Length: 551
Image (cartoon, rainbow, N blue to C red; front, side, top):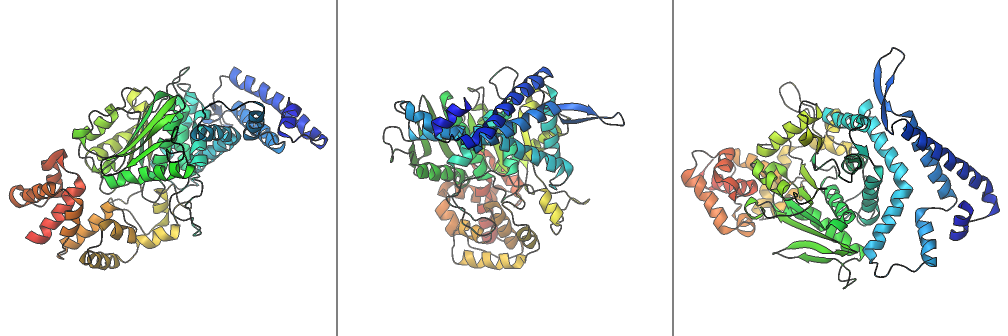
């Protein structure tokens, strides 16, 4: 069979006979190893006993043998030119292509072949990440250590089936179909147009979300993922690529994705990333009027939709608005900027939108540790209890938690001068984050930011441009402006409010501070004004009020 496959792809030569025999022998060894592993219970993790008689958890030696042999088989087949991609191309020449296969279906098929080729390496990448975290080499925080311990324990519990293949498919779809839209490598090489290769912690998350199933079913274990990760760790684009890949993977169920940001601008970060990639791939109606995806991007709607074979996908971006979102029906939700959610209702509405699906996923994202309040503060506390085993049960089992936060001093402060503290909260350290930049930024000249912001507002610059120039997110910029105003400097931000806020909304919030509020407390305003206004809107008008009416 090996020789026939080589003849099919045109790589056979007698000089390969020793390698062919080696491959045939290794495949037989693999078959025996897989049978023995299943005979021993088919667990990837087992309990071992050391020389002192103490028990400890480790990777099953039977599974290790299977894993090593699979990697050897794949390596030998690659040497002989027997890659899944090469074989499929050769076979397609002998068999007519299925009628009507669209380009996106062909790309997904190629991604699956890539997953078969690279699956063993993906597994090694995840194992290496887990080992580096548990050994302390990575320097990541306690909550990440607990997440890895949970993963190892779950593999050995026997409570769930673990299947690497779906996770490998998702990783391959992302890495073969999606490219970076912007940015630079750490060596200043442009990222735009280069493949979006996942970081180790990304693959760890995918292996958890896509790997665990209820035994003997197609039902995935995790229904929610809480990703609490600081900025600049490739979080938003990862969530968007994960949602896009999962939507295509589950297209047969009619995948519907909602990307919901605290403000529309944040939701558009992920949407624009997907729009860029589908346009780049040439799979829109502009390229294929009959089978392409339709992209709508105007003030009324931001969506990507269309049929893929016998299935379909629909991806929508919008700002959080509980009053208008109680009729949602979808299988994937990205709840971005969760720190802006004032109460659990906003979260519950998004979660309830997935009730029609069995395999569903709500992805909760936030980077706003210092300002976590309301719903997010309580939910993070719940997640930490899950990781520590003090909360258990079916609900806890369905939530995947990946929480990155810097360790604090006894007084609750964070030592931003200590590189180890910064590294503990940064899974992208050394990949997407330059350590020297983080350290410099943490001890940088705050007065430089203050002067720049004041001058920029005097020139009536868009806040987004100001934030981008100082490497801040919008929330951090507002915090800087609030500090400037609290110190006694008056700023005129009316130009920005007039352009980007509804006039009636701005007036209502202003009147609250002028006539109803007992103080200028932001927390009181958020509680009083309820769900009619976003926290960003309240903060903007509050700044204007403080500048015009006195501090």
